[in-house]
Length: 168
Image (cartoon, rainbow, N blue to C red; front, side, top):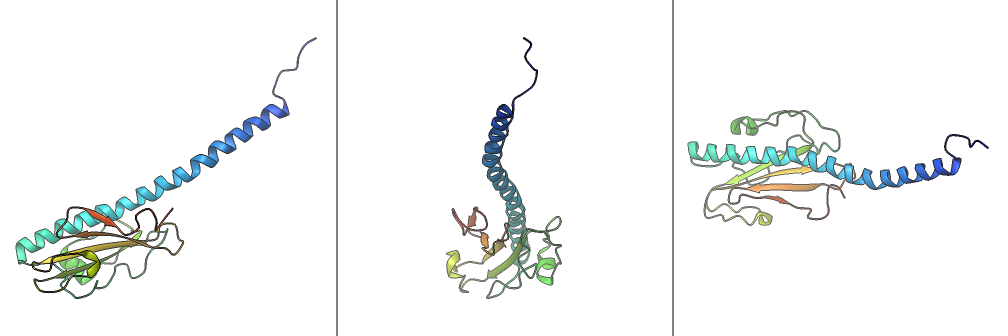
């Protein structure tokens, strides 16, 4: 007797279940990689801000954006999961910094002279000129934002949401 060629319905269902389980494991990992990739925009631009601030200080003797608060964030609202175009302000034009294209983060600057108190959360020494730059974002649109910050007295970028925050 000759056996029919092909797969049985049971074999097909087992294959579908295996593919479903693999997809269920891969999608969260893939999503996490997407979010991490999007954060590189902020880390790259914060690095550029630090370089421009140091150039500005070497030329003018102080950091750009001397103000007592974080100043005007740009863009005006946190973009969320969809990038928005950058509209330069006088503060950013003076510094000469702008992202390469649409941005998923909101950026702010603060700087001060010796004796001017730095924001308490930065732990900056106010015996010298100082600056801090902040990128805040909400990459997954859940209204929980997180901050990335870079300071004049450090070579690291700090994340306000260690193990939690803008995405899970």
